[in-house]
Length: 278
Image (cartoon, rainbow, N blue to C red; front, side, top):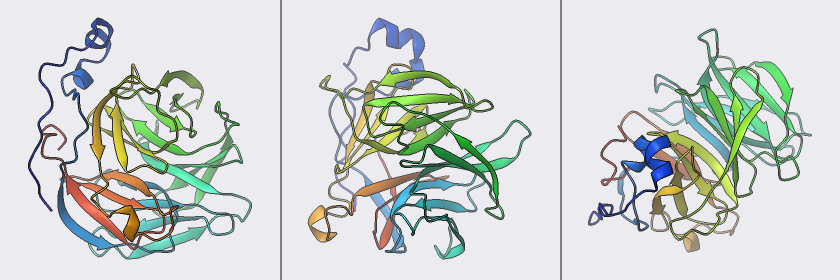
């Protein structure tokens, strides 16, 4: 699927604060939501996976997926060539798995971090074996829930959502909260229900629960600077249950991998207007 490209509005004037604090984000600002994207490939996905987190390994040779629901949450390694599940580990029944992210720790080891919905508990896994290496506690602002998580390597910080309008920034090594930002859309309204996250080209890209929009926000100000309407990717009226929402963003070497909760498919897509992404 490839449709006419809509380019961002070059006349948009960022605020003085944004220009000073986040020049990379402001260099790529849009002013209207874009519905243009190109599907490179549709691939298989386990339709029993209630997808909560999706990431590529640093070398792109493995896809990591974490899934939710009590008594059915899993941590998985997926082959990016065949999309077969290579390894799947069940979580304890008392945990509802949520978002996850790949990162490199202070010793140079690639690790997978996962958070949980209501248990205020996170886990760090060995990426090769999915062995649980560490368990930790955390808090957020909305009943201490965990929804999505991603990682900014340049700042060595995790970025976390809890279904509210806030993003929380944690230090990589101490997991202490460093700051929060409030997320706003192009029209200035607050955006809550922030779900799965992916850090892409200096921006925090967010799924929104029960929405087919993906918004990419400036991590300094929380202002949305890129917005994509993905409703034509796999239309909601073809997915069955209304809870089968778009949820799962993973940045590959030359594409963005997208999927959803209980979807039987994933899509490799590119955004023609986003020329600096790869």
